[in-house]
Length: 316
Ligand code: ADP
Ligand code: MG
Image (spheres, rainbow, N blue to C red):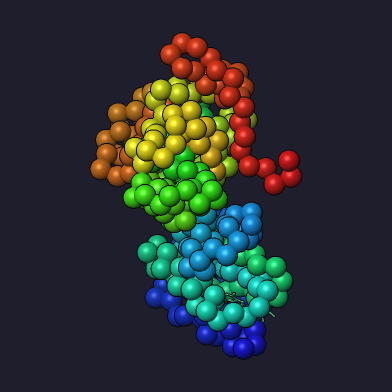
């Protein structure tokens, strides 16, 4: 199968989105951006052996390639709309491609994201998705606007994905709880709806891809402030607790990547509004506050603990 057959067979599905004026098949795609919206763009590459395990199921790889990008839209408070896909493949393996397309389109359909173009080359297995979304004029979220006195929240139960990865890597027994963690690693749920809710309420947001401390550190650096985390407030899931001891759970919650939860800050005067707005959605837990200074510090009771951020850095 040649490059063009491959694109035609797997990546040329027509979209129901009426704002796609021209998609796969031309030199570039054309979309309609409403006059009262801003275009929000992000790109993420996933590489075999770095972002997913060698030999991972193709459908899980397809899902992940889009999920990590949807998570970036969530962190901006944006509605995802369109994507392009750059695929580097060692060979045109049709079984793999069919699985990959299934995982990718399953998630794309759930969020009404249209695949509008891409590029296909032979090379080591690597997948780049560029996502584009829409946000109301002047209403996007950023990392740079946290204020001293804001409360720090985390969605979901951080550390579960790191637990799942560890279970896969060490081939630990696959109990029901272990399977839950593996699922959280393989199929992270992008928090798009939460991001939309927070858009007018949070003072800053980031999605946790590198680790909670590392990503909160990015908010601190860009907002020129510090943060305190109350370790006793960390929401550690019962599934994670059942698979690892308490100290390992805490480490995974603080430094594990791949959760794709939202970390966000809320000013004191909006706390009640936010709690009402997010009730009924994904669980969100207050875990600390923004303070003067710089960097992230962790406390247990009144004691400050030295915990080194060990977030992922490709070049460290
Ligand atoms: P060009 O030579 O102009 O770069 P290509 O031959 O790379 O065009 O691609 C042909 C068409 O197929 C383009 O419209 C491109 O957007 C689309 N395309 C290529 N690869 C993919 C892919 N993996 N997914 C979706 N669309 C793709
Ligand atoms: Mg090309």
